[in-house]
Length: 256
Image: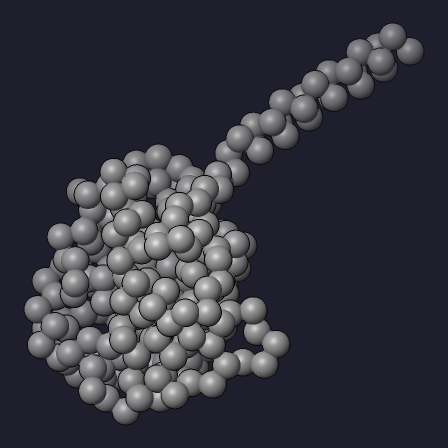
């Protein structure tokens, strides 16, 4: 009986230590404010910084934590995943000036707050649009760029007008002002061709984004590698192991 009690005590102590360590290793949640808008973000790991920007109607938890991308990157890098305004744990303002180009400037404010001069930027879907615009506006803050499920939203193109007229999704928590501001993230061909830092595109082979945004990008930037994830659409591509591996590979290849 004494041996059994001692065994149980050892197990309880071991489990307690394990769960304390596990909790300590979880991504820490933080927030900052820009123009009275609270923006939530999480951090995990140490080393060179990687900033992850999620897609429309998603969050850092859905796009990056649950697929295991944060935990894998955090083994060698400091990972920062932001909930965009209108999403996740961040505020959801209804004024349009909280979105558009302000989404780009929010990333710069966060880098300043973290005292990070340069970071690897990974964006998925609309997060990719923010990431590419950031690269054209503040190239000195970007170490490398990964566009997931995204390509080129062309300034003056038909799709820019489509976004500006985008109706709100019924029952959605994300304010319609967010979608209508996406057109402001459009990039001109001249801006696109000036980008001189490492860029990789990862897209599902069944993703409509490939035809709408990636093919035009390939025609303008033949030097940027494009990886197509097999049997993947827009919403499940980010869950594929190949997607995660390609993100990890590109970030590590371009870490000095």
